[in-house]
Length: 186
Length: 291
Image (cartoon, rainbow over all chains, first blue to last red; front, side, top):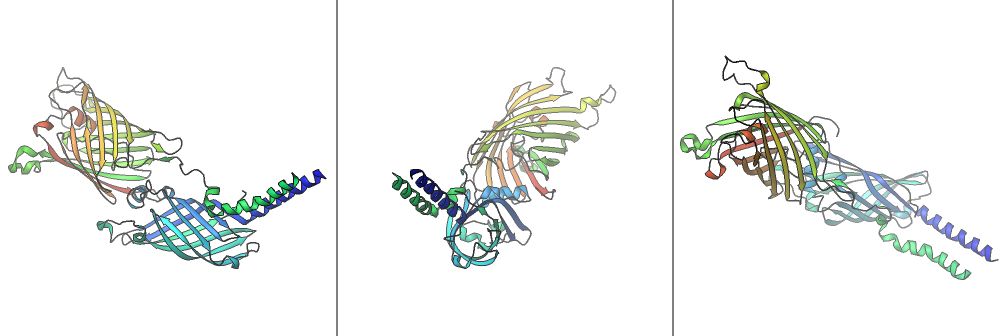
């Protein structure tokens, strides 16, 4: 009798863990790239180790990116990005913490492409702002893939462009996010 | 007891749900990952001497250096600006930690070439390393006509060599300091009693004044084997950065533009006002397609 109860308890515990593991998905190798089209040259950079976590039950979605991880073609551009613009030593990380507003519209158990609305707080260069953006959740084989494109203004995040470069560097930057996620086993 | 276990089991998922707010915390490694410290100096030279900085892989640095006449030569010489000597140079970054360079100076019609290698690089975060270690070896070739055409002249007499070890650290966002024990060998020296070998200690410092302007000092006290009537080269100046260019404007008692020249041939005394204006202009081009 005692043994059976123990077995029941173990099954209970395991099943609970199992279910909750299926709810959350994450990646540490998500990709973010940004493009800024200036008069003289187009600035692009790529990041290959973006952290993203999604709770399919609540629709909570969070991103984190180390600013030093952005790779530019030009070494000097990368140095200036870190030293002069985003000040990576002072503000090493950028984050987004938000919520899929229409999470109920996504059926995480069924393959397909779902248009979503995401709302939350974006922190770059130490400045936090409320943003709202459209995105896409693609479910394939039970795994979600989050993708989105958003446009931000550098001035909103107090990233200053010095006078002599103001004509060459665009104040708006287009950011593309691409995060295929795996189940998170807690 | 059994009931207690069952109760606990039921509570576990609740506890998990309560933690949900900070999802990132559940997957993130420690934020303090190891990373290299960058931009200790704006340029690959402090002023005259090499700095601990590298230009990056696949980057070509075109360097134009000018040194003018003594400022105290007066208005007639336009405070030295009437007389200019120059060095044109090309540096290329073969890897992140290996740079080669060539140059040609108008003084003595001299060619020079160097190899610069960084075996250790300063880093921050977990498992960090406190300083950068850089090795530079160079050769100089004087192509002036022989002073005495009559005697037996050897090609090797035109050559000079220098080797230096740079130990540098970026102490803070604003302040960097490096020490560079330097050895210069000249195959031929002007006087019979002159030393062929000269030892100096390079001291280079940078104080960042703003994001794009820095104050720099480059001092090379001679430790041994001083060439007769020469002084310790001292230069102070400003680095001004504008995108792909770095302008280094400075005042110095030295007119030399390679290590052999400024360590063994600086005859002016900085403290007596025998200083010259000079500038280094650096423009980088990224040649490789992918980093």
